Length: 264
Ligand SMILES: Nc1ncnc2c1ncn2[C@@H]1O[C@H](COP(=O)(O)OP(=O)(O)O)[C@@H](O)[C@H]1O
Ligand SMILES: [Mg+2]
Image (cartoon, rainbow, N blue to C red):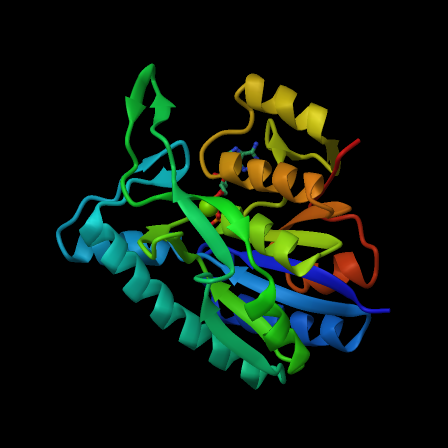
């Protein structure tokens, strides 16, 4: 029986062409083995770079991008382009792949203001996952294609929202009924004092949040882990995209790399 696995990677993790090629090869390898992959990607650094090029300020609060209408347009433009580049890389690695946005898979809702240094900040066109719809995903999977999804979503009335790619990953994992989720990033796993933590439970994650060991972009990541684990995913792996073939080594060889997170 093939297991569905949600793979998410961020812009920093696979910015190097060779890292990206190796990742695509691993995705092909695992898809020939016992896994059916569903992929979500982000594009944080690319969006920030394009905003700055256009004279806009790229600002993040609690690891999330402050997104006015202009920033939303830049995010969508950049993510769409990235998505088509990514599709080509996967095709070269032998994958049958379908690029798409998260619209229609994730129904988003505007995120309420977040607390930062004691004051409330309205993030603008930033969403949370309200509900998921598996229909679109199932029809792609039925045609034996790997969906590769960028995180622009719509709310129930069709308003576009920028949603953190880790958050989208947890929603898509639910829609796909994934049994595993892998978040590929640019660090060797969750670190404490610079040292990799091999495995964590959600209660241990909470302690690391409270003690401010987990901050910034790692915060939406661990919240996505929590959501995925509470929605049917058995294990989440956090892996370093810059360690060659970390995906195949972890999933197929059972190598102890990255951080694995379970409910308990
Ligand atoms: N305890 C921690 N362990 C590892 N990384 C952490 C931790 N706390 C904060 N981070 C930061 O989170 C970053 C990953 O999040 P982010 O930059 O959003 O990456 P991505 O593009 O993969 O989503 C790391 O590069 C690191 O700077
Ligand atoms: Mg991030």
